[in-house]
Image (cartoon, rainbow, N blue to C red; front, side, top):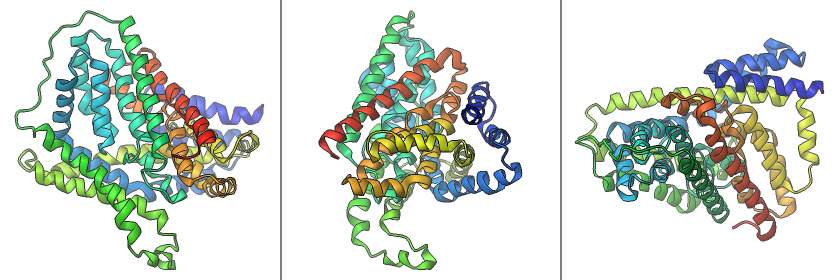
Length: 453
């Protein structure tokens, strides 16, 4: 009982205080100290020997990915390209389908590599106008954006450059297109189930719409087809690099001690994502040079924008590492190891639990794979499982419980809309937690029967 209290109380406090608007970057170290105090662990040693190394390790490994993603998002937003794409979706689907239009617009942008934070700020004003016109309650806007940006384009669709799809690559020697068939099935469940839920709530709570859409795209915005090109480049170049170009190149020097002594297959997937995003940034700067009057200023702002999500996530990684290092956590670890099923099912539970504790898909995933990735890979090989299955299961597993109330992106969404957790979190939970967990269960069942595809 005491062990569970040591684990649960800091997490409950983290969730409750973050839901009241307290900074996650501040709460993570404070709650790590609370956990260490309850477990009678040395406080200073916990912070300097566990919390900070975990935080620093995450920053070291993924700083470039956060930076390039933020730079690309800033260029797309500053040029009006992101807004032009969103407006093109509105014209195609019609403002009467406000929920579906918002989901598709967010999905298109995030699948192309635009940061979900940029998407939220870009799409929210447009969604507010659409929802008013259609008579759909605006408390559903955060859930619609979450469905389009935090679910199927983050963890399920093959090729998505989201960091949550990139982190498993070095652990399993995979790429962004791991287990594409299972990923597509999961995406269909998430998108279809989420839309059904939100449309049902929208019809039940519908209000009288204005019938007018006064949202307009800026005069000098690029045409939609041109705005789409950098997104297409991200997906196409990544596929080409990860499946054809990099595998044919000689990276054997990486096995030398001065380069880390690593297997090249553990790095080429990440390199493909970084190169693709860099190429998309350069293409965007060339295509939208007329719309971006001060490109260096835009890039500088993008670099600044990368720091908050990076440090929020890294702080949560530090908190999760402290929790995972507590003697009480062995209770959970043993329960996971003893659960029935194979490596894929056990890894799914471990990753889900850690994502829930940290309130971060990428944070929970990093902790789970750092601690357990090699062991699960050995177990999978002994069971004859494809490492691609572990990649996809890990991504899907961390894209469920991560969206609990203390998740930084959820808090950002509610803040943008001026809404409280009481007003708007319920629908977010259904589409970003409940449905993704269902999709994970279905994928595990299909993989058990049909294998990886």
